Image (tube, rainbow, N blue to C red):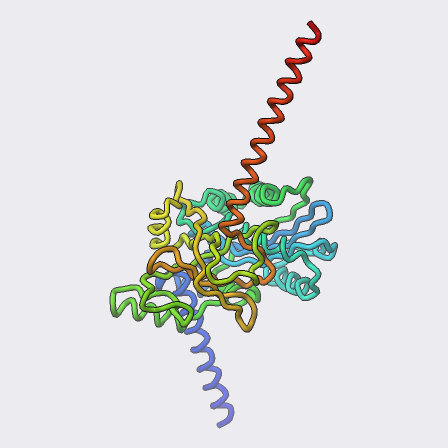
Length: 359
């Protein structure tokens, strides 16, 4: 009897596990049943797990990011930027799960450069933003990965790091594996997990009414006023930005919209913030900011009457670009231009004076 009960429990657990996998696969394949089944069987792999280690002078970095093939975009990332030689011990030749485990262990030791880490995460998100084929850098990386051209893929990533951080003589190691979103969801310890029940409920409401419901309306904003809620990300300004813990309601901050949403593209165009297939940064006003119990912040901003942006930020020591930051940088750039122009005029006058004296 006990043996039969044990077998029954195993069968129930197996069915429950299969249903969970199917729900996850359907979410990532946008309810394409054939693709979902192929994903479960391991035939359809829609991601690359990209493992990166680099060093430049006294800075060491480790990155694991999941690159979505259909959209040429970043799904999740784990980043360490440090001045500790221990980061240089990372082994990119290891399987992605073992590499992630190594990074987790390094993270627990701490003593990393939090500002540089946050900047790298932000730069990665913006460099490989989901743009439905319009992301030039993402398409370039995708092409080389699919050709299995390791040297060219390495150069794309090396150029990205060099351009964003200005490192010289960078030593870089890049390896990658093709996996599926199901693998990432089931086995990654660092990636954000989806809420299957919530996603299923939204899909059900959408099917029943024919109208897509507002995303995540809660007590932070007035439901009666909200006509559209978009997802967005903060734009960082590591040197002159305002530290996130000091942000308050009313602050005007610079944000990026999630360009995977067609409604976000429409809104960006209305704000003249759409150019050549890319959504540009937009200034918005904070209407709600809440520090979460488990860490991080939930922020709501308003773009126009009835149009809100929700931002979920895990980092707590980053500096955010504000409208004041942008104005300051423009003024500083203007001052620099004036000084350069004055310097040129001065040297021209000196040269003319010397010529006259020599005559």
